[in-house]
Amino acid sequence: MLVSTLAVTAVLMLIITSARLIKYLSDAAAGKLEAGAVFLVLLYRMPGFLELLLPLGLFLGILLAYGRLCLDSEMVVLRATGFSDNRLLKFAFGPAVIVALLVLSLSAWLSPLGLQKADELLAAQDARSELELVTPGRFLSQSSGQVTYAEALSGEQLKQVFLSRRGDDGRPNILIAEAAERRLYPEARQRFLVLLNGYRFDGRPGEAEVTRIRYSEYGVQLDEPELAAEIREVDAKPTAMLLQSTDQRDRAALHWRLALPALVLVVTLLAVPLSYTNPRQGRFAKLIPSILLYLTYMAFLTTARSNVESGTSPVALWLVHVGFIFVALNLLYLGHLWRRAFGFVIMIVRRLFSRRVAA
Image (cartoon, rainbow, N blue to C red; front, side, top):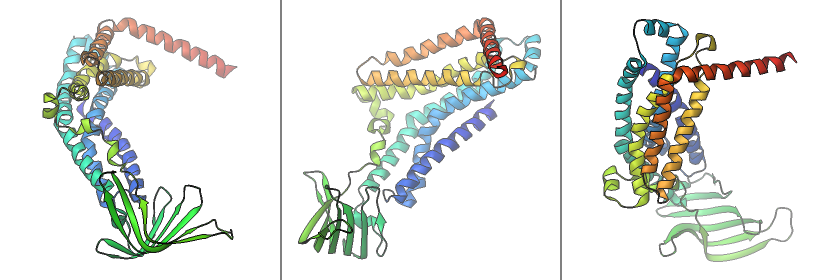
């Protein structure tokens, strides 16, 4: 069962990290993120991914492992030798407790620490100036459409600068300067690239009317930080700090971190009865409905967390667990009735589908 859990989690982790890697690589290509920081940020984010993927991996692992026993009729043999649902549940809870403790360590310690490190790294990337992004002798194209070129870099100044961008009126602006430097205005929380001793040309290609303006200083406002904004500050706070806080968002984050290990135990209760299948239905007959049930569970938890952040009592988060424990016990001890109902629904769907194909 642990092997199935690890295999499923590894596949899910590969999918999530691949999607994140593509995003960070696109940020690096746009000049927002240094190439050397891409894999470091991804490494810092991995504990946060794992704390969410491990419960799903265990859930699917139990479904696949016990589903295989049903498919090979080994479950029938086990029941004939006296294996009850409670005993099967005990076997499932061994790995579940291990995974729950691992998720607790991730959600309470490693994930906030990783998010804090990632936040610091992304904030440092956001704070980089045009001077650090520009490589002398190479054009730098940014997502905003701005193109920057500098012949040389001397200390804190770019030399022989070319800058092309689109103005507020939609017309291309070309700026040429002897030098450029970054200036920060803390009172306005704005950063500017100040070009020194140059010309500004306004006009459209092919038009005869071109405006030329000479300037001694010309400021170009730099983009606002956006990389670090994807990490919520409350998620990066240490658990010890959340325990001492009375802020509603901090309380919601604290209960969320405790709710994830509880999620592992509840989905184990759900997975055992959901894994029972008729050999004629196939191993994956209940996989899609089970995944939909899990997604519904997570949607309720996420909604409850949002409500707690808005002022609702944290009890709302735990009521979701109580509700799904009730569903799990219902499936576990009244499972034969639900399995008959489920088999009847599948039979009706197959008949309707076969009639449509025949028509």
